[in-house]
Length: 211
Image 1: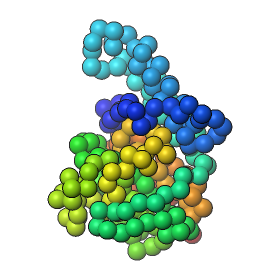
Image 2 (image 1 turned 180 degrees about the vertical axis):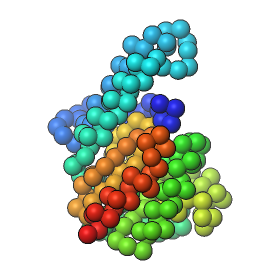
Image 3 (image 1 turned 120 degrees about the horizontal axis):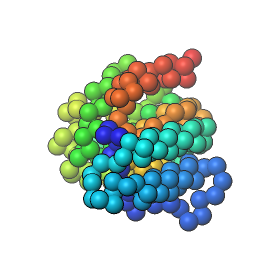
Image 4 (image 1 turned 45 degrees about the vertical axis):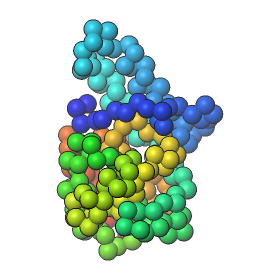
């Protein structure tokens, strides 16, 4: 899982009342599965940095189960400001395809996939699609690198920990494709390089949703 950056931190801890089929319940289930896998992995008992092959496969399985769990679920209400001063509310996003990417500037896999994600913006940015990058970094740390530099063409929102809390996932980068009704069509955690570039995965889905 070298392309997956796990951050088992407080904002992704399981919700105490996460019941039913919601994206929060899906995220809580994934968190618990990952916690169990790490706790039971023999290599961790000896202070090794890498998980065993068996545990890595179990993590991949848990991640795939999470992807299936959130598919068909509605995303939470969103209201946020981008680093260039644009404000978004639910009404602004209604009826549009959304590509939502959670990331942070110190995440190598997040930065590695940006060229492929930018390709999506260049192709579909003038259509009924919004590309939103929720970063956990402070705005002042992001602006010199990403404001009008062309490095990442998504609409970037800083200080997005509170939004990440609503989605409840467990690694960076995490990406969601959302249809015009606010329903998740596809989601994954981790860099897609090992499975094909994000563009190759997302572009056909967007084309299908825009028909």
